[in-house]
Amino acid sequence: MMWGHPVRSVLREARLLRRALGTVAGPQTPRCGVSGKKWTQPAGFDTGVKTFNSLTQQKEPLVVATEGVATWYSCGPTVYDHAHLGHACSYVRFDILQRVLSRLFGTTVIHAMVITDIDDKIIKRGWEENVSPTIIARMYEEEFKRDMLSLKVIPPAVYLRVTENVHHIVAFIEGIIQNGHAYATKEGDVYFDIRSIGDRYGKFAGAVDSHGEPGSSNKRDSRDFALWKQSKPQEPYWESPWGRGRPGWHIECSTIASGVFGSQLDIHSGGIDLAFPHHENEVAQSEAYHQCGQWANYFLHSGHLHLKGSAEKMSKSLKNYITIKDFLQSYSANEFRMFCLMTKYRSGIDYSDNNMSEARTSLGTISTFLHDAQAYMRGQLQCSPVHEASLWERLAETKSSVVKALADDFDTQRAIGAVMNLVHDGNRQLQPVSTADGVARSPAVFGAMVSYMREVLDMFGIDLLHGTAEVASGSGNLQGVVEQLTHFRSEVRALALAHRNDPATASLRNPLLKACDTIRKDLAPLGVLIKDRGATSTWEITEGKQRQTEQRVQDQGQETSS
Image (cartoon, rainbow, N blue to C red; front, side, top):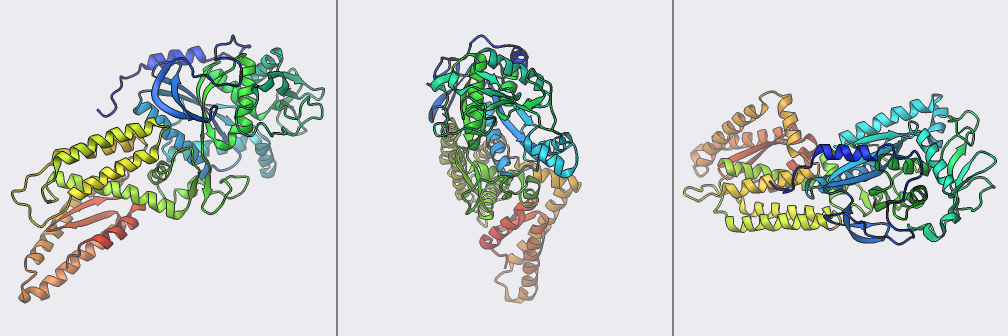
């Protein structure tokens, strides 16, 4: 097997979760790191990965508290509108990281995500639609979950709604007040006291020059942020020791992450725009509650998705977004994953049709090689002698390069580059010839290359077999029909080519060759790609959205029958 790690016990994960659950009843005994702003590498088990930690602004060894298990919390959506490609890019990128950590480095990820289902924007949308904010939130929450499944994002172990955890949030705020790090105003608001934690505030860029969030004139410091907000007329509210109100934005994540994972968290992720103030304030609240200096050991932030030519990130507030549903009308989930893989997860990324076409072409190149390699293994593709030893060597080098790239801050760009180089080397060996009688064949090495590439793509969440299987299952014995049709066409074409130099048969030969070319071109838009390889032909069934691109490439490079 490609991934040589032992199978982890599911029972051990369950015990870990049981220990973590229900830990927000009161302030905790310190268990997480030292006090102060300086980051300390945690004690535990090295995963074999070095990752860029936003807390230190450099790559650090990724060390987890429990061997073979990583606790991971991520900020989920505020569900007041359609999810868009900006969201998709962040969630798909972190899904890829989690898959790599689990499949390649043997570390099972226990992932929890919050759904923000009460917020000013949700309330406003409810007023605009003249429906309850709860209806708005549930509708867009379900749409978000469907969108994530359509993009093949593995669901977290648990989704948690803010509205179902308000009682925990109230208890969490009470703990922070008890520890001397928050205060209530006469209006019924509760604010975090920035001055109470001294110079420990400011772990992320942006905190130094911050003038704080707007709020009550009774705040002690302009940087103090709301933990609890007094309710306004016609707004949803919950009872609390400070009167009717609802949670502030940042407190929900601290409470819910602590409720699942306790006073120590391995990894926290989100878009780079969340680093400050959201994640900064999360850290302040959590460390004030747990009375420790290092609550989350690693913060991973993904770069923004921009529309090509725009300096602004894609966002709902800027109205410059493409919904996931609309995107999937033009491109596939596999193509979007390849688009994400072609850049580092921390980098900003430009969305354009040209960049998507590049991702589609790369995916098509891999798919075509896999089909050609299989055709060679079946004896349908006749080639010159293969330099087998060099291919085995290149395969071993690629495996090593992929592991090194992904161990270096999950560098998918470099890993995909290594795979594409292997495809190039394989294609150079698969040069078709008209006849290859008596030539030694090397199917085993191509079998190994096909298996490895499938495993790598599967780890990244790309399943090239899925689209083909859907087409085949939807049309009964379609593959058998295509096989027979291609065989018949090959016999007709071989007969015509055998008389290529006979003037007496030109009137019959040329129409037959033209008919062979016509059926090849007519079948391509229907998802059947026939390729003429010297005297033989191969075929494959392609995903609908790849067909036009692959057909154009084939028409440019295809040896015409005539």
